[in-house]
Length: 338
Image (cartoon, rainbow, N blue to C red; front, top):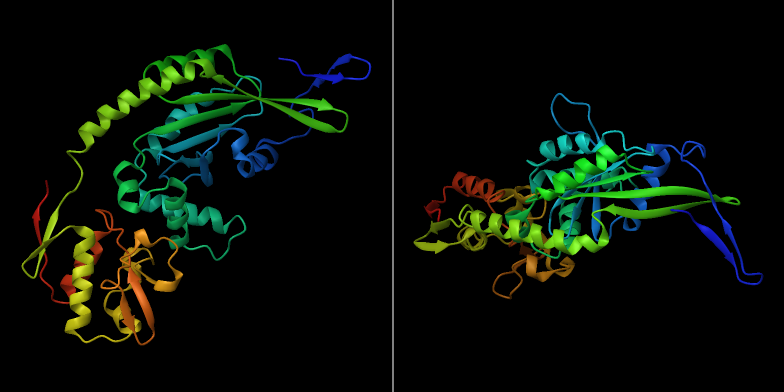
């Protein structure tokens, strides 16, 4: 595809010269990747970059150029090439997809924290990372954990793609994988480099069909998965609780039984680290009350401030809380797991 300038005054159309990233001295990692991670919406809207050059797996030096999530809590691998063929990048991305598919939400939070601290936010903490992810997705922890990483999507970005690569990608997409190919072609116009960014697979007119097919597959997976979710109930002091209400009940009982009147004393018994530093929050610092027990009968008014406790408890973090409660001689039993 060619680009042209149109001069309205003399009705003249002139072709803009095509160039290459190599000719212009544009490097893959230092230039192209840095520009795209800061402007990822030019490739794909509605994603959040969570890692760059990700390589946290055993016995491998392979690195994912950019790792992102979408607003359905799916992981997205973004691979970049400045060549005109793609250089077998689909095979490389498939390996990455299989390796990243076991990532937990808890680990994602750690990865995103590292990414932010290396990109201009040195004081960024895990609690900040989790809050930003939750706000981006628009769901609370329990909802995210239940669907996180159901799919791993792949986005391939290159100056062009070989016929072999595009044929492979279309075949894989026909078998319910989600791979997008985006061509990013450079042109020189006077002192500027112009970029023609075009999605070539799947074709925009075929996207609706692919989305519907993937939705059917996702519905089947969700139907199977609902039977695997942890709906355990817990018995404490003769009462039955789900995970979040168990935490509130135990902490309230502990505060009343031990006559605790300061947050410092409570934090000594139930450290905020039990939930990645987000167990408690000062009531006047809460941004989203739906993520904390914030009703008048649920907050704790201590001498050193008013605090609320998180209601975001799932299978990934409830175990540590129960272990701590039992270490303080509280009896908690699992009633069922159905």
